[in-house]
Amino acid sequence: MKQIKIALCASCVAITINGCGGSGVSDQGTSKLLSATSTDITSTSVSNKENPHVIDAKTMVGWITDWKSHKPCDVKGKLIILQVGEAFASDKAHTFIRHDDKDVFTFNKAGGCSSTDPMFDRTDGVQVIPKAVLSGQMMDGALQMYGIDPLNDMLLIVAGGADSAKGMAENSAATARFAWSMRYWGIRHYAVLDGNIQYMLNPETNADLAVSLDDLFTVEASVPPMNGTHSIKEVKTMDQSVMATLEEMVNAVKNCPADSFILDARSADEYLANHDVKMSKTEMKICGPDHNGQCYTAFEGHIKGAVNIEYTDFIRTDDATSDANGDGKVDRLDASYRFKTPAEMMKLLTQNGFDPKCQTLYTYCRTGTRAALPAFVGMDILHLKTRLFDGSWIEWGRLAGRPDTADVNGNILLRSDSPWRTDIPALTEKITYNPSEMVAPRVREGSPLESDQYACHTDKIKKDDRNYLCR
Image 1 (tube, helix red, strand yellow):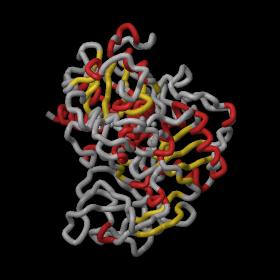
Image 2 (cartoon, rainbow, N blue to C red):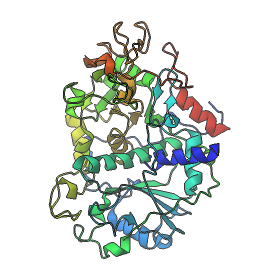
Image 3 (cartoon, rainbow, N blue to C red):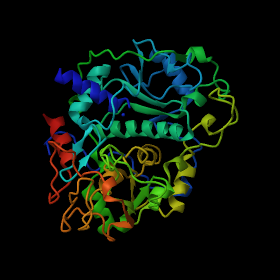
Image 4 (cartoon, rainbow, N blue to C red):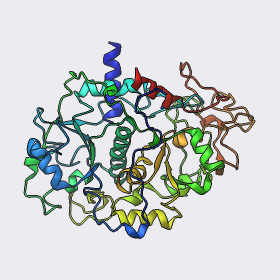
């Protein structure tokens, strides 16, 4: 029963979705680092032979309709489609990518679990982090539930429709988060569709398609077979360089500012700590006078030196020309949500001060999902040295050591002499404290996870994952 529960809960993140000698674990990165300047990048498409992790609609149609004939030559197994959101909000006859459940499977995101479930919590040794990268055990649960072979199957991640422009963009970010997780765990065969399926796989909006909606979509998603036998341990090599820990972020700010470009992918209100407009939610709902309201981080602001480039600036949200989702209107819900060209995205970074020749790109947001989109752009499209701060603001904004800063239960969050205190001008700008009655405890009550404010390092997640791969 315990194994089944692990598999079920792992699937919710996977479909919602660091020494061992000889393990092949990398913390230096396996990406091809960009040595060109921004003016050298002239490609008008992100889906080309230089970017095997991004595909266009034509390629996807070939994969769906005749996988055996069109699959990449180095892929021996099945096509596993992870679909984030139903295809069309107003068309229930065309909901999921067509599948035969033999060569092609389409699995629905969501599954009913909440990412606020304590089972998804992980600790870096200092702070418990909700919605962190999946552990090895969780990865195995997902692989076994969905019958995925991590060495031979192709994982295609696609964004579906939503009932708001915010939801559409968040679906795009979720696909990037999946891809980042695959990269971290060393899965080679993964790809993201460039754009939203309701636009890119719609003959009404994509004239290049010589097929109908009935050829591409069906009503139901695949039923998880629950018969997998594979483990993430078979991969043997992982790329932990794409994750930045709290310690690495502190070092980037304090000791390596010239070598680091920190990108805050949140909204301007979050970045500027406009407290009355936007507060940073946590996973807990035990705050307020009745202890049943939403909890928030201890303070707002942004990491020192971070540049605010909202994640939606990397995708096309304003190119709608017709009613793609069938709701009778033409608006942002009908946009393509495709990536901008590599040249445009590099220009966006360099105009904000990024130097591709000598800087590492660090990204963060509130929980690590929105920041995954610019991280994916950096690591898999522009081929830059890129690291996603997985703890993001939900970790950074809780490490308050001001003596009078307490949580909803009246407990001090950190002692002022903790080496991991982040509410200091040397690490954070625009510091704005939230009322104590709205502040989440640093650790869930009864949590068995380690949380030591005087820990020497914050790399426990990386170490645990390395050790799991080597067992």
